[in-house]
Image 1 (spheres, rainbow, N blue to C red):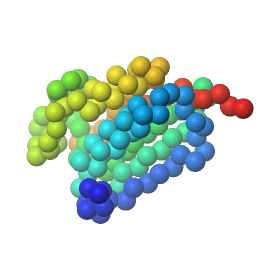
Image 2: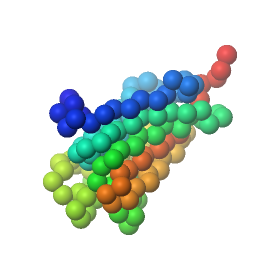
Image 3: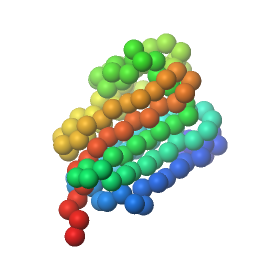
Length: 135
C-alpha cells in the first residue's frame, strides 16, 4: 500500500531463477524486510526485486531509487538497533532491527548479504540462498 501511495513502480524479475532451499516463512520475512525498507526510503522512482541463478546459489537483489546511504554508514545498518545517521536517516521511523534480523536469517540459511549504495543514488541489497536441487 505504501508503494502505491507514493506512486512507486514495483519491478519483479525472478522467473528464470531456480527455487531456493530454505524455510519459506523466513525467506518471505527476509524479502519483506528488505522490500519494506526500500519502499520506506524511496519517495519517487521504483523498487525492484530480482533473483538470478548463480550455480549452487540464488542471488536475490532488492534495489531502489531512494535516498541512499553514505559509505561510512553501510556496515552500521546491519547492526541491531542502529540506524543511518545524517540526512538519509532523518524522518524515518523504525527500531533498527529489520536488517539485523534479515542478516541473521540469511546467515542461518547458509547465505551472505551485502549492500551497495550512495547518497542520492539509491540502494541495492543483495543476498544469497542455496538453490534447491534441480530435477
